Length: 163
Image 1 (tube, rainbow, N blue to C red):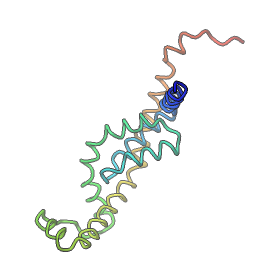
Image 2: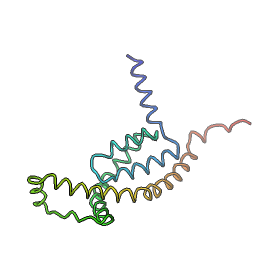
Image 3: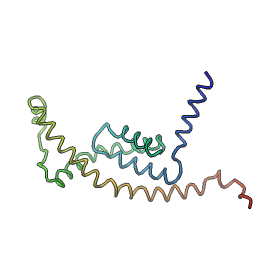
Image 4: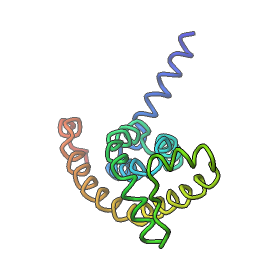
């Protein structure tokens, strides 16, 4: 029983320490923000988990950054959709609340078709800004994490390597 508990704790400890180099931490923060503002609610947790596993990033930090930008995600959904509609020349999705309710009740497939195009356009707009946003976050974070790792108290107290 104790070996099972030790195994679980060792695995958990390894997962928390994974991806803690300055490069990986900077990538984790940048990806967390970029994926965290993805314009579809309820998808970012799974997207971040998959990316963290695929790129061997720190899952806990990636999810933390993802959750920290949730309010920004909510604020940006409509601007992404509006930008996408403009960029891709789509007909504006301008229904009143009453019209949406009526369409939902009477012509759900038409509503799904219309909103699907609008959401896809929003994803397109998100894709266009994701690389510049990644770069704008990655490099300052890399600088900070490199500086932070040089001032790590554990490394300062070690004797210099013998020649």
